[in-house]
Image 1 (cartoon, protein in one colour):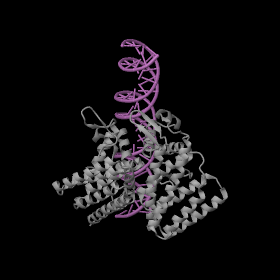
Image 2 (tube, chains in turn red, cyan, purple, green):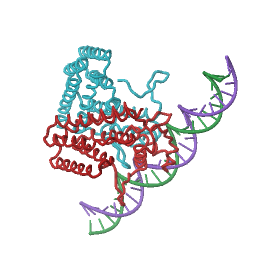
Image 3 (cartoon, rainbow over the protein chains, first blue to last red):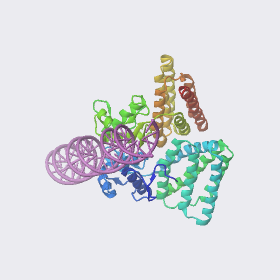
Image 4 (cartoon, rainbow over the protein chains, first blue to last red):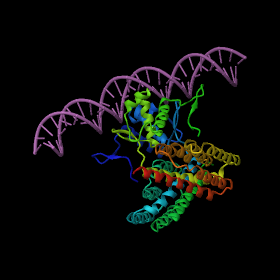
Length: 232
Length: 232
DNA sequence: CACGAAAGAATTGTTGACAATTTATGCCTG
DNA sequence: CAGGCATAAATTGTCAACAATTCTTTCGTG
């Protein structure tokens, strides 16, 4: 999953051109992988010290994190790491269902032939990976995101692409990462991915959208159950 | 169209609690109504002087404007007011079609009975307003947004609501405001609004979504034609 | 005359200090 | 002893100066 705004310095390491954006990435990672736990109070001076920078760029990073909804901020009162609840995740999955459904429709209309073939090849890779790692959930997840990212790209709709990548996928990653183990849905997911890819290859916009929506709606039903079980 | 984040001071005037957010609102308005024209270079020190504040809060305002895509910023190089082109507007209308279609579906499922009646009353008002003002486009537009806002509210989906209000509607407002006169589509729009409201009242999710998508897709076709004519 | 390099100007990024606001503490009063 | 008010501490918001980067202009050279 290529990052859309980043530069590469001479050593080949990824590096943003500004302190604020580097810090933004750091904190984002810390939140998603749970190092900064949900509901944690964000104290600017503390974090500035921790990351070894001044409060100025840190504030910018916080504002950007607020925009992608990883942080909630109340004027004069401070900010906290978001706490994911079932309602919020539902809202996110529903929005994603809508946008990715449209993305699949557009992909069926616009995706170049060679990219369609490349997409099919990607799914072959995934199948091989599933056979080998059998249960190693991490790669499955990244593979899943990879597939959805390609569809979003193929839609050629900048707004949809940015919102899926910038906001929705991040929150879903965070939810997955912090909700313990998921049942291995890899095989059924792969099957559905294949059907979607087939619909795109046949330029069947209607079917591509319907299948994508079902796929995501199905994923939500699984996640929902897990979240409900957790509350007990 | 109630503003979602604002406080009211003792004099009853609307006022944000922080300099940055007030400035954000000011600049946003200036961009949308064209006082700050498309492509204008934003120079922080100049604007800070103009608004009588320091560069700190101004920078925060700029960052927020960048997030809602009213400003484009390049690190170390500066920022400009966005320039709307046909492709971008298409992306926005397509995204809106997707999200508002879903919102209409959810509204058909979730909207309380009394709000449905209130929605119908709103449309009566609009009809009366159209008869009276006959061509005064401004009120039609605000009425239009009013209707769509209520649907978005009724969806009870926070993510969809925030993105429609915070970003998409703003850009559409800006496009409308700066693309000269539009042909009066008020009557056909009202008719379509009525059909959507009826579908919601009958709890027909499928129909509500389809009608909303057609409605927005139709609006885009009009706007598209106008934008194309402008380029000549 | 065109092209490129180097110095200067303009602009953004960053810092630390100060002001305003909120939250916490403790005292007083009923 | 409970509740509320005043004071103190902590935290966020704002400011102005400094550093780093980019854009512009000018000069030299082919």
